[in-house]
Image (tube, rainbow, N blue to C red; front, top):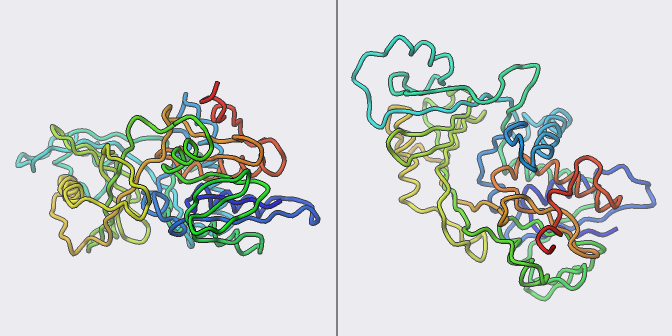
Length: 376
């Protein structure tokens, strides 16, 4: 069976991993081609924070998928030494509200209580409120992190190492049955094609697959900064979901094992460019992130401390639920995972591999994500 996966992000590359690592008879092999216009992890999968949570979607359609995906991340990290190859580690997380201006008052008595929750790099006197998120029980781990680009590239490398998978750079133009036509005229014949192109999937579906427009009302751009200075290597492995009081500053701050810290701001509605190559960060948004970070750390983070500035778009559908499954004979889709794309790359990869190879997903129920919901 030959499968062409359109999209070199975490969802597509992890699908390639599970397709090439499935337990199948030697005489019933699989061949996988992953095609992407730019390269592996070129969009959000190379620019996200990499925070993973098992149980943060309780009551939602994705809850079962999230729990499966988190368990698979644990298993993959144990099997492949994820700590070494893509920075996998268990973390805690907190919500934290800080004052908009430095405090000159002496700390109150409850600061000691806050200090048990607040990371060592946040100024205690600036904290208005802080509380843990999720469990920190070492016997029941529910939160972790990884380096998104490294993880995505590792999944692709592992798939290619089997000899059953290749990567091809090219822009998907249209589909001809289950075959893929690239913009330069090349044709990729296949038994099945999977569309896993993140926020660019809806357009291809509607224009080339005669499928209803499932784009969200607005596409959202997220900016981020990776900083490193003399202090960041000592930051606690505790992810901070922070708010600056009396402002619109919302930050996700993710200290990493390599001594850097990933910091991203709020989602900003902006039109989606035609290509990931055209997604560039806005200087004003980056400045806002650094300004907000200073409210937590109590100091200015100079441009010399900036290792990278990035921007990416959330892959979403109009009902904000992933779309996964069979569109028509030979054509499948796996997209719309929103901010949980890195997390759910594993569960969706396994489930879609089962669907492609066995005709049915058995690891998780795909009915909530069925493409048919948009055409009924």
